Image (cartoon, rainbow, N blue to C red; front, side, top):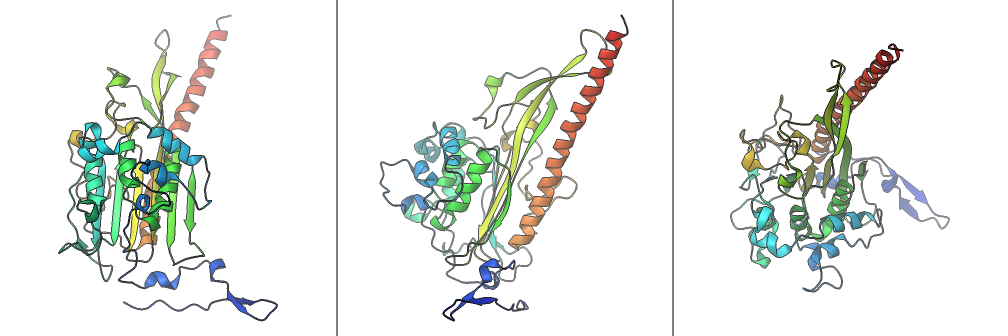
Length: 379
């Protein structure tokens, strides 16, 4: 593989004559990201196990959400904490309730020395429940399978993709108690912005410490769907809903009389992706997608057990389109290319939903104006 062209490093001189690098101000991909280091990112100690003041009596989710680095909105974590107030790590570990039955997580783990072809994949059952995700990510020192590096004959997991449809507290807890310390800040920010319904597109290359990168996008939108018939009871939903739907009554331009209104539901939804790592070979991408508006009843969180098509086993659900699926065994290896593809596909879907809302509201306004004109013409 050809080596990247070396770039000239800009410097400035202080009054005392000492030179300082201006690399942190240049818009370039650090040359360190093109070098594969055998020891890079192999400290997989969970963040909740090394944070200051940790003991078994403390709430692990609270430890994970504690942001000592002074970045981000200090109140964002409170939204996640309140959403997860009833979750129990014991129930997730034992697979009790929805944590052990609702399959909504897709995971792909592999590596490639030359960043080509299928690479070396580590088998992982798909789709996963929150309990199975916890066991997949936990470390052997915690008496669970899941070591990312040097795990017997299994390939190293240098590139890990995690996709969760309709994020619930049990999945959040599974991620929070297993994320390595070096990746905790990026995951914390992603969860806070997704749960908090916050828009954001950012690329962050920290200027201190060992070279790392963080790329993320959070695209909130509203999805408008006609109320299905017969209407399902809200009490039948499986799992804890993250966002509340709104009922709308829109005029039917083709009707005149008592039934001239149609019932719709307006779903707040968000597509989020956070990608973080240390070089072209070693990175993690976590994505969270709201899909309740796509369910047949309009009142169900995604569960692969109910998916008759069996989608999600072979293709990458984040970057695949129904007309152009991308198989997991034909991966996009480089992090910048993967991020760009994910953003392009997600933005197209979000724009389509926004366009539908705008069109329906415009049609409703026209129908309302027409009804008013008909009413006034009678006088």
